Image (cartoon, rainbow, N blue to C red; front, side):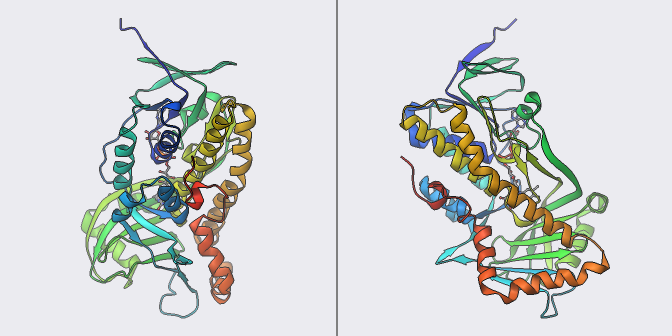
Length: 407
Ligand SMILES: Cc1cc2nc3c(=O)[nH]c(=O)nc-3n(C[C@H](O)[C@H](O)[C@H](O)COP(=O)(O)OP(=O)(O)OC[C@H]3O[C@@H](n4cnc5c(N)ncnc54)[C@H](O)[C@@H]3O)c2cc1C
């Protein structure tokens, strides 16, 4: 029988998704040899196309602070304008909202292929010998006064702290029995890449259909990434269609915004749910990203919110190390929880409310749908604050989110 290998580090990072990768990178870039990280994923994924991600200014600033924005920017498509509308309103002047997607001189969001972002992050992480990546499935977790212990069939890991970034079905959350406030949206999102005849002019379109929102996001002049949410039933039917029929369906929904669609590729279907963890921390454990919250993709904010978790948690840990304190101490973790929860709850509930308002066929609230859009449209200050909300920079005072390197 093979003997299990014992691995000791300062922090165990569960998951190798984007939030976990950013977390390990921030710590290693700032602390160098002073921090040793064991990063565990049950399945190290290939770097193939996953889907396009909208990254907001808060994420861009973080990349700038980490000095990796120059590597990422060439793969990004800027969103210069956002048009929000709802069913059947594109010909009418009412029920259309246009945002100039800038904050001061800065573009407030960009679209990037998730796998390009992951490739760059992986290359950065590889530079650090202090981050060791393990592909293994864990089967137990034990927390005591001295340390946090995790076991798999091959390894026994020990550390001071576990940072759980292991996604919405987090095993850490499950083993510790930490509950979430959650509900199923009974919605599935179709994500795909389309090639079309009209230039998109770097404009993102969000059309709130009665069946669910459809977002068309610029991905080069004649390509757009599409995220279309609808009932599970409806999307299941779409999933059964052959490519040409699916293209026809998508063409019908995108109307004339982007002209004739000639190609549809990278098709993926994702079930949607709402979830907020009841507590972001436990003894020697902190949750980040989708392990802590899963939000509706209508605003393209899931990753961005997760990276704001990363910013606060890493800054707290770095500060405590600087001052010679124990970074796994409950007080340090409580500060993280206190600072993050308001943003998480407000963001998740806002997207939930928008989805509820628009994704239905209730005739009585049709005027309200128009009213909401027209109301925002008439008040420039309100429009500006919507762009700021999307950019995420006003939501936290974290240095990284403001683009300031931490040392
Ligand atoms: C259709 C759709 C469109 C979206 N568009 C956007 C967008 O435009 N912008 C945006 O900001 N967000 C968007 N999101 C949200 C975004 O994709 C997620 O918020 C983000 O991927 C979460 O990253 P994460 O690293 O926290 O979790 P994940 O990406 O889920 O990573 C978790 C990792 O943990 C690993 N793991 C799981 N279980 C275990 C285990 N037992 N042991 C070890 N490892 C484990 C997994 O293998 C995985 O690598 C979208 C989501 C959907 C569904």
